[in-house]
Amino acid sequence: METPHSVEWLANKEWEWGIFGPYCRKLFSDYSLEPPKNVTFNPRMDVTRFAGGYAEINATAFAAVSSFTSETNLWTLPNIWTYIPLGNMRAGGAFECRGGGIYSTAATGPTAQVVARIGVSATPSSNVAMGTCATFTLGNAVSAQPWAFQYSFVVNRLGLATAGAQAVGHGWFDYWVSATASGNVVFGGVVASTIDNTIANGFMLSAICSTAAASTSFTTQWVMLRQLN
Image 1 (tube, rainbow, N blue to C red):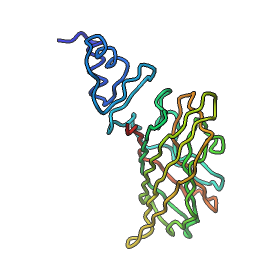
Image 2 (cartoon, rainbow, N blue to C red; image 1 turned 90 degrees about the vertical axis):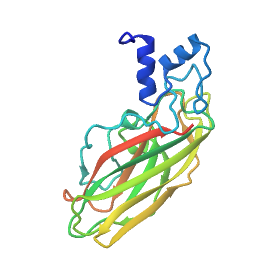
Image 3 (tube, rainbow, N blue to C red; image 1 turned 180 degrees about the vertical axis):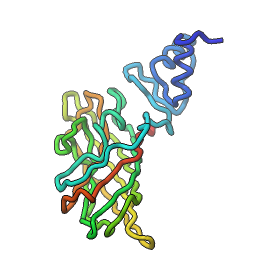
Image 4 (cartoon, helix red, strand yellow; image 1 turned 90 degrees about the horizontal axis):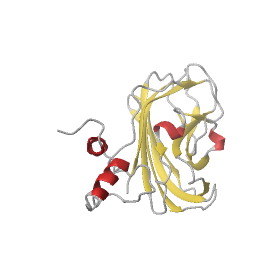
């Protein structure tokens, strides 16, 4: 039986969680074992994720955002729930973020846009833009109806100093319009060349509305990010 909190015990916990973390790496190194084929064994990385392994997922829905026209983050800081650990952003690395929630509108649904960004800030404009979708119109008098998104991106250059990494990605945003219709927009294609790979980073989806109303709100119910290689 393993001793709780021993290296072996902690390594097995990392394995259960779908990560090849520092305790797994130490165990594999101590026993001269070959690392799994679907992970990169780099001692400088604090966490190396299996393909299919997601970062921690929020336990409950985030607070709704409403009454805004300027760009607003749809969940708490990007480097908390959709984080990219320091060292995991590497040339050739690929990442995927997914999420979903509900939205409500006033009698006349406003137009809106969603924006993909990478960074650490609660202020969207302080994060690096990865693409903005075309303007779309939300449903009229919608109450707690679903939306969902997916965004994937690849890192194709690292920087030795801050703001020197480059990445590009694409994604989609689906939303309920009425009982008989739904909408879809795609976004991305922006080659972002000022990403800071010298810090623990994060992905964020933000939104812009044409009119501010307390009855128009977005609630992110869940969001998760994984490293694909």
